Image (spheres, rainbow, N blue to C red):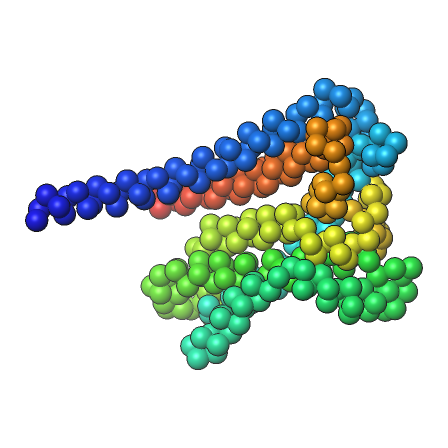
Length: 298
């Protein structure tokens, strides 16, 4: 009996380790594949062309700056929408709402995360874009603003769920101690609970950024798909084109092994690098804050 139990425990341990290592292996395999297909673009397209302000592959113009700029401006707009609403909703659910309301609202928020992005894009085309066009007196409603609003809506459920879990994990003794010292309820939330859950909240924001910058269908449907380099903040009211939309739109039309084909994979490499930079930055901030807290406590 004891031998079979040890064998069973060893098997479970091996499966858990394999699952953990597989995530690293999958990421490494994806990176290797992107590099294998994308790096040849650097051998056939000069850097001046690759990082120019014009994307027109038919005439061999492969400027990535309009695509990178479009992705960044849409993602920035989405974060301006998602962070305050998502964090505020998480604080409300974790700290303010009564238990019965929380049990109703949190599942509803999580259901929103399951809505297909193509459905939101369809709603954006039929309702949001015409509303923006008429309300803001724009030539077209298919703009970066429409994409930002919808991407913000897509990122909010993820931010709410992760942030609420992080806030809920803060020990009750922290809140009781702050209230005992004379802090108000809102001072306790802002100065005690939220800082204590900083790492989880930052993780939620990071996941929201990753969800927004990697979204394809929604931005492809509502941003106008115009590869124009954003030069000012007013570009939020103009059509743009993101890197993900470019890959999704053009990958089915290119010949395998062509210059255009390799450039599209190189866009994937750039996307991977941006996502990696976001994750590394967030991890560094969390590590720095943790070390700082340990020094203060010691």
